[in-house]
Image (cartoon, rainbow, N blue to C red):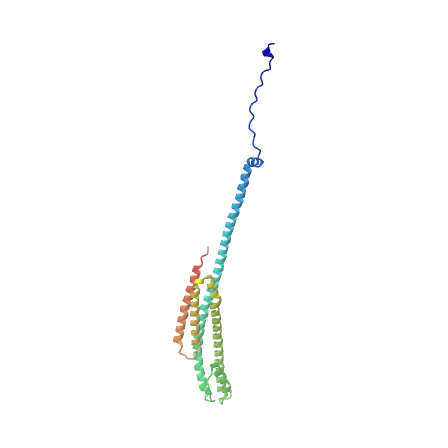
Length: 267
């Protein structure tokens, strides 16, 4: 073997080593590996939040809508009560005038009959000079007729006529008192419950109702004053004026209640 062959061949140079890798980041690696799941979870959370917000908003709107509907229902019910009060007032005022006018005519007849009876009684007994109320005069005639010198037939006739007049007076007195009682109740309603409901549900119409109530009060009291003059037999012109006043008030009341109905705007 030659000397060259016996020599060891030179060693092959090693390739360069790659630079050292940075230290591993497990959180980042996990995030990268589960990015899809993270995105889905985030979207789910956002969807839940948005759904909750939308649910709250629409629920709040539904609640507001329900409150509005409930208020409209209450307003319609109160409007009906106001209308009933004013319709009752129209009826009561008309009844007050009709009762007064009818009683006025019958009291006129009663006054004429009483004058005729007193003339007949005066033939057999002395009449007291004092007057008094109609009821007092009728009650005073009974004992006077009983103690008079009138024959039995004349006495019975005068007592019968007196009894008829007393019944007539009582009947008319009851009718008048009933109409006045109803008038008082209506006045309390107009100035009380009706005024309160209008103030709450139709605040801008409160003054209008107050004026309407005052007009009712004025018409009712005027009618009562005419009734107090019953028996004068010359009240026809006053009753015509009273009926005209009632007609005007009823028209104003109808216009007021009709306008309240038009203000109701249900959905």
